[in-house]
Image 1 (cartoon, rainbow, N blue to C red):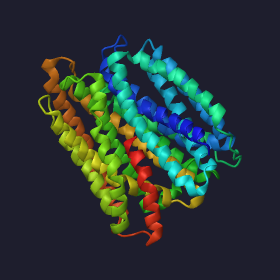
Image 2: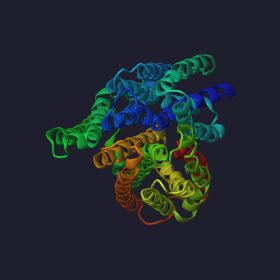
Image 3: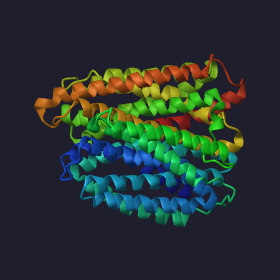
Image 4: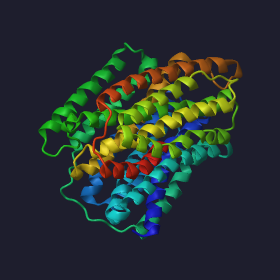
Length: 481
């Protein structure tokens, strides 16, 4: 693969991943804008992107495999630009949410298409390095999104941020057209539109119930109906997948205890991380008085452990098995959330940064083993599914984390966080929200630890060592995103 093509693919990944984080820095500006969004609408503005991204990721990858990855990538960039324009032109919260969802659909096409093209065009001996570069780009996208969103919030407007998506996507599409070669399509790739629709409906129903709970009441027919619909649709998806010959996702793969544990662990880690991302910018701007740009830079300590610790986590898994680094890492994420839940307006930023480092170290410690589990527990011919499942678990966890922390925050705080007289009430509510997320994460961690069983090597000697060395750099980028 040529270097220009590799750089273009990584740039596409960086932009798609960056828009996940950028909007968090604009929540204060959006809350005070002429759109007058309510707390639930702010949550949907963040979650629409992640939820659509998660729901369409696996079917979008299958579409790219079947009809052409370059075409899927160009289509994804087109949807991304359209979603950015719709968001920028929004005259009401519903239009903004729709634009964000359209961007998420574009991202769902972009991410698997870039990885598939990269894997297909890179020689086997260089594939690990290329995948590490791809995943590092996703991680840098998270950092760039925070910094870019902060800069836009301070020097521009939220509309300007969404407008920048349009020319950026157009430039990337032109670069893809000129530098990225076409790869052979796979007419046998399984595309299951009914399964994709039912699974997306199930995810939407569950998140809808969580977000709308404070507005309509947890015992209201609307909220209980959402949860009931989610359960029914999930059961329908499972029944459909077991009957059809070529399902979107075969539930039988979860017969593997370790695959269940690894998937749950990835979801739990990002459940915790994205709950923090949602409240971090608000805390720093409302309680600490940081400017949007400074708030974007203040998240940098969270990337330190994600960049430096994965190699240690991989080596620890090689020596003791994955159970120790996975369990320790997830519990550290929970402990970090509990620490952050104690902060107030008077907490020094240096102390807050230490709490972020605890979260960061936990993520870096567990990421390699979780990533390796999901990829290696599937047969080699299902490696693409393992990658898609890994990313989907991450995005679903992120969507649920934002929904839960935002819902608890909205149910506990009904004032104006920009009012200095209400800062203490806001940080108290934020603390309750983060402790709720931490409790859920710790319970999930216990299930993950149990799923890994007794500590020990799955494979001995060079095989495990090669896999962990190949995974640690990839996991670093994944964790940072």
